Amino acid sequence: MGILWFGGQIYTMEKEGSMVEAVFTVDDTIKAAGTYEKLYHTFYDDIDKEVNLQGRTMIPGLVDSHLHIVMHGEKLLRLDLSQMTSAEEVKEALQNRIPYLSDGEWLIGEGWNENQWDTPSIINREELDSIAPDNPMMLTRICRHALIANTKALEIASIDKNTADPQGGRIVRDENGEVTGYLLDNAQDLVKTSLPDVSQSYLEQVIKIAVDDLHSKGLVGGHTEDLNYYGYRKTLDAYHSALHKDRKFKAHLLVHHEVVDELIQDRLRYLDGTRYVEMGAVKIFSDGALGGRTAWLSEDYSDDPGNKGFAIHETQELEQIIKKARKHQLPVAVHAIGDKAVEEIAGLIKKYPLENGARDRIIHGVMLNESTLDLLKELPAVVDIQPSFMTSDFPWVIDRLGEKRLELSYAWKTMIENNIFCAGGSDAPIEEVDPLVGIEAAVTRKSTINDQVYHPEEKLSVYQAVRLYTAGSAYVVNQEDSRGVIVDGYRADFTVLGEDIFQTDAEKISDIPIEMTVVDGDIVYERNPSRA
Image (cartoon, rainbow, N blue to C red; front, side):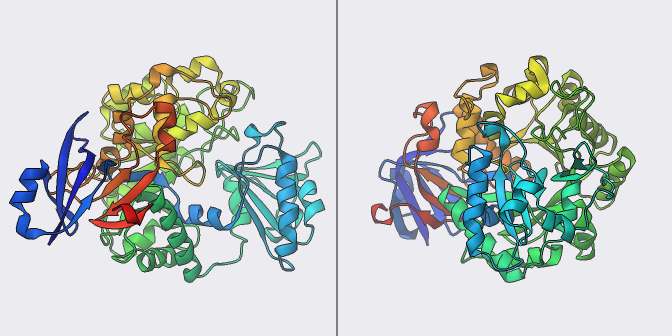
């Protein structure tokens, strides 16, 4: 028996402006889309339930193409520093948390961003020591490419003035060579690997907390990278335990290169898994982030002469990782923000093409130059963009890069017009997970820091922006024939909005309420159940 959905604006997203009056679904599949009268009479004997949208707007189910579900759940559980506007506010929040900690318990904060503080600066370990000398403390920056640790945490991690910088990381030191507590990229692992181990039940809890929140944001699925941080097997088992027919959410799991051997040992291939947990590409980091000046650039940072950032891996090591993925017919998903990183990754993808049709992705692809743009045109790879980066990076990124290099940075429209496929995500918890925030950012390009619009020539239309989170997210995982549009035979995944997103003021898109989230024909979230 099936469900007839009708009574609102139903955008199929096959092409711009394409709409139908009604959709008939059976279990997890769209059986037909068309006029209400035709579907009602054709499937009269098979209609078990009718859902009147009551003027609301239905679009294909939104999917975040790049986030960290476990980390998002942890952010909801931990001390959230992302909205704070000064170092003093951060320190006050830490001080207020201390009475609730037991002796020796770690204090973990998430998401500080000095670029949005009244007076940008980096808190040092002595300041943290004055708050909690006996509790190890770790505060992760918004970009996840830097953290601050206090002396207790550094002692547990065996970090002192004699500790060498790891490849792809930096231990920041003062003029006397003493460790400041500020750790960049791979240097963070020295502290993170010293954290107490967590249980599978803990991971299940944070996954459930995260997914419930994602449902409320209209998301039916997400491409996530979590498998290396708390152990491959434990984390994978937690996903399978948390997500199933009773908690429907389509999690596509990228596999960090450091645990790909375990995937191979399990004899799992790309897209193997269940309806709600499937295996993805091999995740690799090639550089850092612009905020900490660790993204790998072809020329020096404009505000830090002599610094081009750095590569996480030596070129030969990176090449071996990609060759290993190819040996097992696996696509790669490579974090690359700086133009030099994008150039290197695009070159290696071209050098080692994948023969089975699975699609590689370049995650972020923030900075391009003319040569990298030309190279990307030749590749079947998808650029996995995060529109919210632009709205939170400006205006401070102008100082980092200078105006000239920004002409081909955050260049989404240029990529799309050059037939470079793009998918859209948030990189949550680094940015706000709400897909409507990302869609609004892609359409307006307005900074959340100063409300100024930057490079308006790269604005996307609402249709193009919504496609990033629907057809784009399906395409990058080779599922464009079953997901991402509302047509016969596709999955019954829908996001129902309180307003028509294509008629709403672009600057108010993020204010549109999510009325309903539907996964495989099942309503998994409803803002006001009495209306249905």
